[in-house]
Length: 406
Image (cartoon, rainbow, N blue to C red; front, top):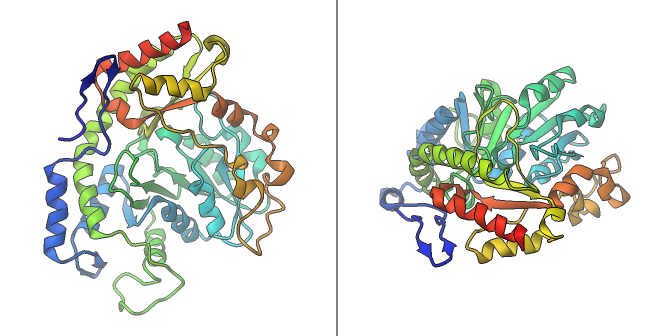
């Protein structure tokens, strides 16, 4: 199996990502040799893998339905459209996430409203939600950053009070469990990404899970050209696009899903170990699991540092020092309000963004103080670091202590 760690003098070599084996090669070859490179329709299967993966992933996520699509971005778009989100609606989104969490809202002709984050969990601060709700608010996109669940119990209570739909952005959170329930099952729908860096990957791909039969039918229709399950293939009942997953992607994901539970166990075990080590270092604060979290996807492993405890070092220099010791880091997402497309409102023509809490002067950092502070002091380790051995985790702690002492 690829990705086994090896040592270099003075450095730790962590597993490569993605991890693959002969099984992955065989499954791809099997699809190619079959001649069935696409799934076909629900009533007339061409290939077998998309339909099988949907059942297998739904079972793993403990959801009634899974609809596979071509990537995680369109998964959010289709989920929002399936819930009736459209022109002029407002959708609350965490300010600390990949652009897709908000660009998917833009794609539905709706307006994202950005919410600041909790300084310890790094996910949406549910205490700030109600101040962002207006008469035009229709939904919330709850982003489980780094696999860490938003406090879904409280968020669902607020959403019910204001009659809002919920889409859980679970792109980082495969396998995360909050208060006995897998994420993706708290809201109306949960969306997943299988992009190359994700903890389950086929290079690209996405999925939507839900537990409502009618919503599942509508999501299928929107993702497959407006078709209805079981009806004539060339009848199109509503606007829909082609967001289908390919047989090749699904075949790889079925193999990845088989090895995922063990990887998930190792990541959680190693994360607990590394967190104990790093939180004992003065000036280091690791992302705190939201109270009630039982399992964490750990797409990334984030922590913040106090520059005053590290001789005023910048996060760029901190990251460079880690990398020079063989410890990989990945860039943190810039806060959404800082992105040029939102700051300059270079988005959909004809849509009124004047009510947004971002753009022009509204995009000033003072409007989002927590996310700016966390982003300025944040370091993220990629998820494959948590698949290393204990000695590699000790190496991380040791290097950080060395950085502090110099």
